[in-house]
Image (tube, rainbow over all chains, first blue to last red; front, top):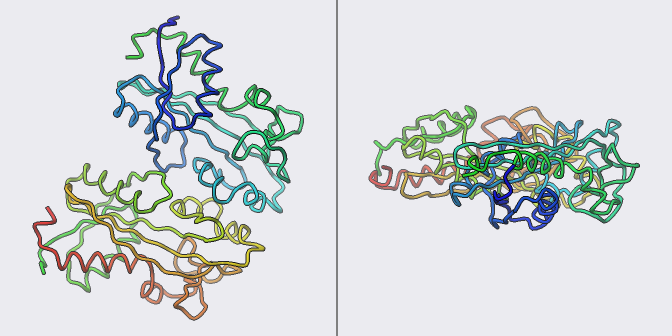
Length: 194
Length: 194
């Protein structure tokens, strides 16, 4: 275990930084924010996107850093909106997803988050998922994006949008990926980071 | 005018090559196909995507080459599916677009194509558009992607899917971008190409 290691979180999203800081603090790992716009490629595979972004960010910054990418994958829509969740949320929005899901009985979906860590030599990934289903109406005002139309399996029937931040992050895909990554950081020799 | 110049079309899509060959033949410009999977970034801006892909392809190949990217932009869906048309076509499909457009009166949309040419020093872009609207049902079996739900303004009310290939390419966004590019190639000194 090495507490003096510092990892950098490369992202332009301050909300993601706050979530990561909370988890890293629990584990006593210093975290620094590298504010930057990531270069993201088009791909059906979240992992491929995160790995590319992390390597590009490393080329820019030459610091041991990680990026995080996430998406909502709806079974009956062949994984849509998947890696393009942020764009689809801005354009089609929750109303549009509900329209697409009208007359569809199987409402299975999952949120997935991928963290890619790059030290210039290796790139490692850490994944988190939360299973659930698409609601039949928009419910709740917490969170962002598709939270008001996603009902996690492990909950009590409320959408992520109806849960406060601590309830959501207790089971969220992002938390799960962050915890796996934090575990790895704690258990890894500091020479791996530079 | 310089007829000995050869330009390379970097694409993994043989359909695009055939369309370009026809137009370049008319202009008596030799065209070679560079079969490759392009690296595409995520962006709301088709031009930014094409420029990046062309520059990346040049880094790989070091030949004067162009790439082409296209998308369908629907006004009332804030431009969706736009740069992600190919992914949306595979997942949400034409049925999904019609669901999203249910109860929407303004059905305005346009197809846009962007060609980016890169010679390692400069990157130039050429654009083509065709205006029209989203049909209320799927019509026709020609073409691909969103052709069966797009009615071009300059036509007779049929969708692109109801037109044969020569009717469609006479007015298509891709043809328009290709013609602009071919004009530029013809009028440009060969030293610009290497």
